[in-house]
Length: 265
Figure: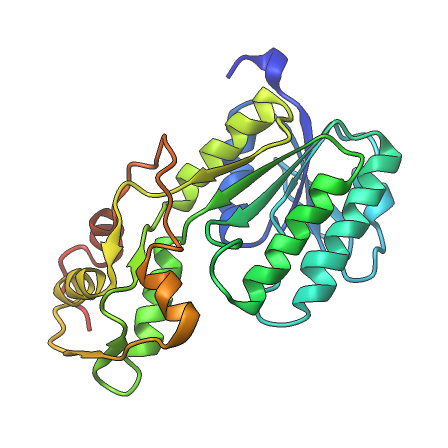
């Protein structure tokens, strides 16, 4: 990236899975990075500021003097409406008052199709961003392979791997998502929603077979069909996208990096 495209960018959710890989990628591409944490931190390569999306405390100071905001913060397990929707509104208002020129919001492929409570909040947050006064871009990404692996571990707690064998997933490497976000920051606001997925669409049973082989596990797959509209959307590819370009790192790449042929169970 050419230096004239570099910006001073505030990153929320900087300590999360995507944030941890986005910060060094942004620095490497010439951006000046200010990162948000709820508690004070220090880092030679990043300016850390304390701010809280749940209350708005510190947001005005956090956005002061930045040209762009990369909004990665999310809370899928608790206080989701407070953080993802109301917190996004607080951030958009603060950024608007500060004259920020671009807000990039990271969302999830399928938030407009898959009937999950968390997804409804993410879709509402997209709408907050689009209605705000800050020029914006949205990137919807498919699931990270780490999330899929956590799901498989949870589904196999009782022995067999439980799950709907026909559900479709499209894991995408978070480092490649970070690269796409850096390119979006350099390009400037589009006022559009883009989608970005991994290089392959996998059925759940395919993902399970590869996971078991990488771990040297013989746990069987016990099919459990997800009922209702949720199951129909997941089997129809609600979590996948045909958008191009895609990432290049596959589920097999992730498993090789994680297990390295050790056959760990």
